[in-house]
Structures are given as structure tokens and as C-alpha cells.
Length: 180
Image (cartoon, rainbow, N blue to C red; front, top):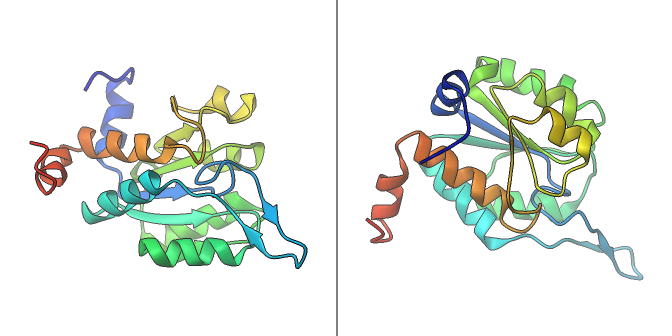
């Protein structure tokens, strides 16, 4: 896999144990749909979800960290088998530090995917920071990698596949689908 990464960043990706994701604008297209009763719905890409499930099967843990609070996010996390979801978090850096400390991980063992300025402080601390293609420019400027795909449209799957390939786990995962 030909990636435009230096050796230090490649080593960080190979040692990843945790992927933290923002939700709105990363796992979704950033749009919030509300009906007249105030019920909220969001669009999630099934490929992103399958990528997360495959990544978790290889031993990389996944956490959702979002500024909004929504029952839809809880449902999606449960559907994917993601047990740790932090919603309504305005200081994402503080919560990021709690998550990492609880797991006794170093920053280089953590990746973060974001799309807006609230994600920047946490993204500056991790071993591998990712901006989705339609992230705001401030996020793209500090990210180690910007996806080809937009948030909610395969960006998360792109990153999951990349991590599995760079960690040498893709063949194991792909063999279950008779790809190799």
C-alpha cells in the first residue's frame, strides 16, 4: 500500500489500539433531520459500519465522541457493538484525555477522525489524526491524512481499511470474504 506517510507516522498507525470518532459530519453527512414531533434521524453509511466492525475484530477498539446528544447515536453504536459513547461533550480534549488514561494508552496508539474545529485539540494529541474530505479547512490543515471520501459517505471505511492494511491484518479479514 503506497501511503504518503513518513516512517514515524507509519509506526504510529501500525501500533494503533483505539480509534476515536466524531459522529456528525464523520459517520454522518452532518445533516440532522427532525420531524414535527422533534424526532431526529441521521443517515449512516453501512460501509462505514462494516469497516468499524471489521476493525474491531482485529483488536482495535472504537469510541464515539460527539458534541451533540442523540438517541440515534446510541442506537447506531449498539448496532455496531460499540460499547463506549460520549455525547453532549463540549470539551472533547478533556474527555479524550480521560478515555486514553482509562485505557492506559499512549497518544501514539490512538487515532482520531474529525471534521470541525472542536475536534482540533484532540487531533493534535493523537498518533494519527484524520480529517474527512469535507472537513473545515482548519481541520484539514492539522490532520495527518485527509480522506478521499466525505463524512457519512465512506470516509470511515477508507480509514478502517487503511489501518487494517498497514497493520498487516487485511489478508486475515479479507480471507473471511474470499477476497484473498
